[in-house]
Image 1 (cartoon, one colour):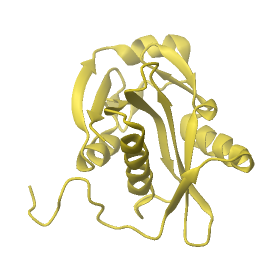
Image 2 (cartoon, rainbow, N blue to C red):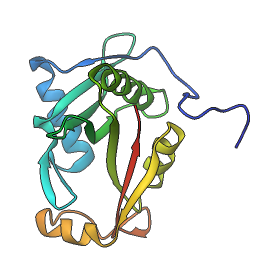
Image 3 (cartoon, helix red, strand yellow):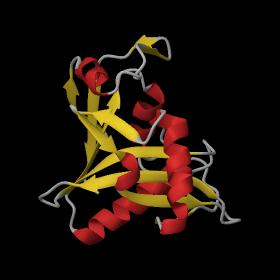
Length: 174
């Protein structure tokens, strides 16, 4: 590990403000999810989740322009929160890091013991991003994407030149 880098610390961060979504964010949320996922519906761990109806954090830049969002949901026990989606309209400037940091802070204040998410085997950018921010691989669900295609046939067969087949669960203590 590069001694100049510490897990959980951003490399480049601009002034990013994070707040809970309000009603006037609805169009931005829908537009951003549709641009990233092709719809607001996300197929993961055998179910379809409407990311637009989950709890949402909005990231804004110094000029108060919306530059990203994070959707999440609490498990019934309230001891864990699942990150459903994370989208930055301007990558590489600290939007995702700011959103994760805000969610971690909120989770700690709420007594949440675990943050977790699911990504796919092809999503090397997400694997690198989350692990650099303290998430760790918790489980591999072989062929879960094959099952998810039954719920959402638009899921591609290949992404980044890699066959899309498996779900990877990453988690952390907030």
